[in-house]
Length: 157
Image 1 (cartoon, one colour):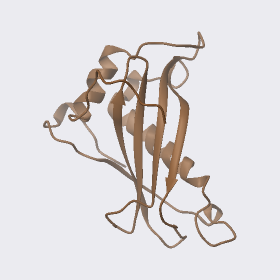
Image 2: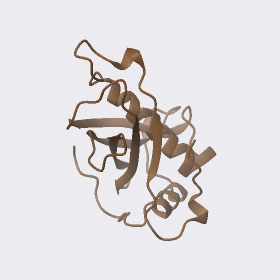
Image 3: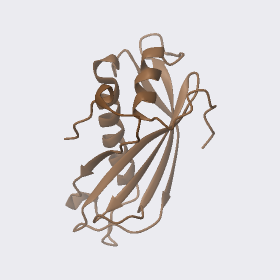
Image 4: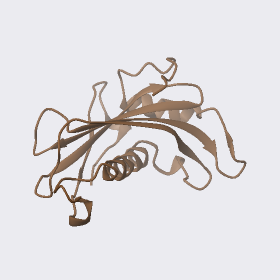
């Protein structure tokens, strides 16, 4: 998997990139990857991003992020024989929410086949309320995203 250590990074943007296997059941009757499968690809990459960046600080059963909004643009078709990878970045970080932008690339191409933007809210799963993103999380995310302005408001998708 992806070897990512935010504390050993220099102040330069390094892409969080993971390969995703396309399976036969991802293909629709037209022979290309079904549009809803891209959400699964984004989910896999998003969870790996947070595991790599926040490690054990995030608990998906206690305090984590929940999805508030998702927008996907499909730019090219993807087929069973293609190899794909998802590149993920936090592109804005607000008080209680963040925006993650993800690109799916196939066969080593420089242009993405799909782009996803997700607004996520920091959420206490036990109390069922949104809350301010912990300062430690903000620091770890910004260490991995040196171009990120941690004081910018999160845009609506």
